[in-house]
Amino acid sequence: MPAATPPFRDIARALVFDPQDRLLLIAYVAAGPVDAAISESRTFWFMPGGGLETGEDHVTACRRELSEEIGVADATIGPQVGRCDGPFHLFRTPRHARERYFVVRLPDAQIDTSRLAETEDNAVLGTRWWTLDELDATTDRIEPSGLAALARQVAAGTFPAEPVVLSWHGM
Image (cartoon, rainbow, N blue to C red; front, side, top):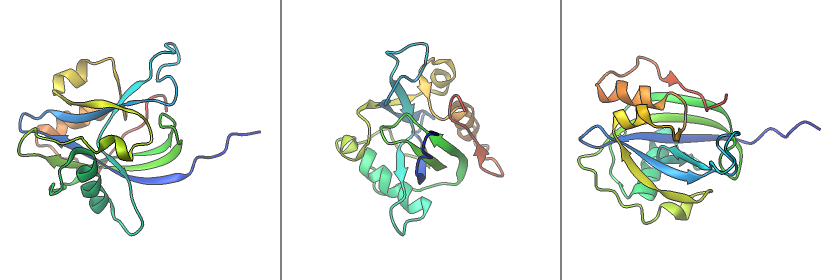
């Protein structure tokens, strides 16, 4: 019997930069191995954000999610610079994600993650500010594929004319 198609979910996420052009990512425990060759490999990094609630547009959802996850209630949501659509299976509840990525620049690196785990589907391991060089060099699983290159482009002040289409690793 074929596997059921996961439900569609519209999602807003942010490339959150501090003044040093470091990118904020959240580490999660995946529902299964993130690398089929390494069964104990279950950590992946993702941008802050989450699903749209009834009546929300992407910008409103992005602002709400940043308030809930990193304690930044008044973030200015910049342009949409990327998107990623397709089945995503690292969270406990698989979904066909339709993600939209927006730029957010914070005035400093101060965040409050005290409420982060309350709203998450998977266990949260923590947050980290990544330099662009660290993103380029890491062997950690960063989702989606191509995020480091997009972050470098945005940090340099070059915004794509159309949102860059990214993909999940292995897709």
